[in-house]
Image 1: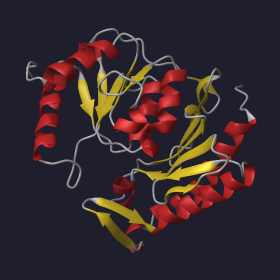
Image 2: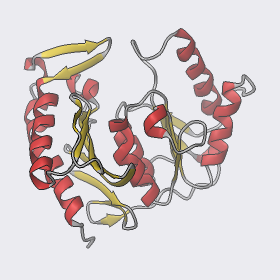
Image 3: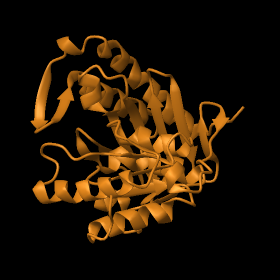
Image 4: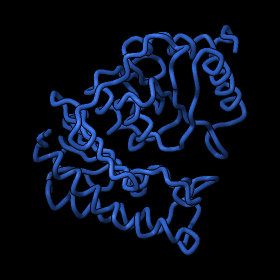
Length: 273
């Protein structure tokens, strides 16, 4: 049985407590009061309640930590060394449409380095967790990325731009990438919850994942999961700046390079679907 550190225990407990309210509200999505933050970018009462719960639990356990939260932004500086990066409801659009695929994501950062991550999927009661040097786990089971060696055998996840996220040129660029990858792999999935896409790469359910224009809260916990499961994670320029650029590419060690090359060639107009 995997033993969780005190830090992971705090994160898991907070995520589970926040998820209780999400589960109650999920069955009543038609009755939720919903406001619009922007085109196709919704926030519900459930989202805000979950964020309040997470902040209360995490602040009580680690008062020296600052916060970067999706709804509130950087709401507390803390000691300047430690920070929580939190998405209280990743997959809000799924949630509000009754699609049973969403998660709570919590990451811990020290001196600018991600050190731990928890992604909790409440409907399946799956807790994906990882800490630097301690490996990645799903509940009590150790995780490893997939061992597939060829793109033709790979199942790849992605995120598709939507209204309000990118202009026509950005959408056209993405279509070029999608066409290039689609013609080279066994299948592509777009499930709308980046934290779970990354957790699934860590678990070997997906062989790779790429997306543009993500927020730090969408991917921080998942980055730790993939790394600790033996995978490679970079930004789309193959650098380490995922949280700053908003672009991410994650895969196992055999597929990261070929997938990156496909995306590069698509961006220069060289790839063919």
